[in-house]
Length: 56
Image (cartoon, rainbow, N blue to C red; front, top):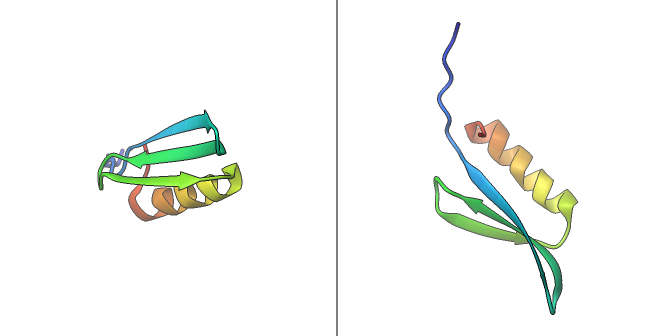
């Protein structure tokens, strides 16, 4: 059995505020924070991260 190494971990938060709902993605490996206004955009970003680095 092949062991895979986890290359990326993310935390996804949904924040409701005065400016509406935001989806905030924290990439723990690169320490990058991205904000999105739609789930479609957030999922597109997460799929890219998963394909590029692997995802946990």
